[in-house]
Picture (cartoon, rainbow, N blue to C red):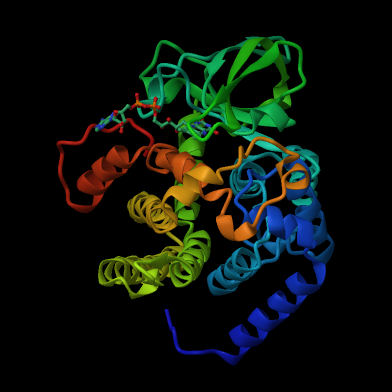
Length: 405
Ligand SMILES: Cc1cc2nc3c(=O)[nH]c(=O)nc-3n(C[C@H](O)[C@H](O)[C@H](O)COP(=O)(O)OP(=O)(O)OC[C@H]3O[C@@H](n4cnc5c(N)ncnc54)[C@H](O)[C@@H]3O)c2cc1C
């Protein structure tokens, strides 16, 4: 790729920046800035604003209603959104379900599902993991049995992010128990309000309710809920997981965290001097900044690589999640005891309106730090990503071959 400054890209950045400055409601930006867990209504409001501008799906091709931007334009857009504290959009709809449906779905599925994902009116969740199938995803036990024109799905999914406010789930279920584990899986789209779907909240270390255990008890899915060919769900899932990990680098989010870290270091004092003067902290901030620059270039390379190999996305996921954790650890270290003293429960929707606090106390920092312990687990654990890199990049046969690759 050519990284020399480009007048078109600079003009594009200014256009995006101007639009966000005019259109992003300040209360949405404040919640994001304070690291409160994104609510459905926040994501939906921002999605609707972008949708009206034709910008809700930067990575989708124009023919499906996407912005049709180049990799660099997408990156600039994400960067500007993060630095303006725009709320995140639905990863499960826009980045996972949508691209899977327009790549593998039928015309009828595209017509039925893509408009709701684009406009942000329909929320999705990802039903892959099960109590006994996480890294070894191919061993999942949820069964789908054909009954006339319909499928009947029975099983348990776990760690299902945002299932409590999702309208639809994409999931993997076993349609043939007799063949090799990867061969007998199919990819389904199911309605979360269908009879037989129930969920139990799981409250994580940060005291927030973001993930759930979902029970599917004889859920009837119409025949057109099957995406792609029967028993070929593993191929669809591999496409989706590679997509998931390419976005897991979270460079714009980490850039925002770095900016915040520097602001805290300039504001806080140690032994009467600004914390930013502390040589040990300065060195570690410089280290994470260098790592972030390197990761950003790796993301550009991955985005411009049409082959979309899973090795590159495994590297991005690995480095991106480690960097997120380093940054929040440094933020907590810089805030010291204040991080704990001012920690606000992120699941309290009214925390903002009911509490009088100073945003400089960073009430969301501790919750984010604790939640991001999971970043090296979700989207495929980092140990598994190391196995993929060992096997595909370094040519080691030692790593077994049916996990979340
Ligand atoms: C906050 C959060 C949100 C999530 N959201 C979703 C979601 O929306 N949808 C969804 O489907 N899933 C979701 N997940 C699940 C996530 O994908 C799994 O937790 C992950 O794949 C690991 O699976 P597991 O928890 O079953 O751990 P296990 O697979 O049991 O692994 C346990 C430990 O053993 C290690 N390990 C396992 N196998 C190997 C191996 N072959 N080599 C080396 N080490 C190994 C793992 O790295 C891990 O450290 C979420 C998880 C979290 C924590």
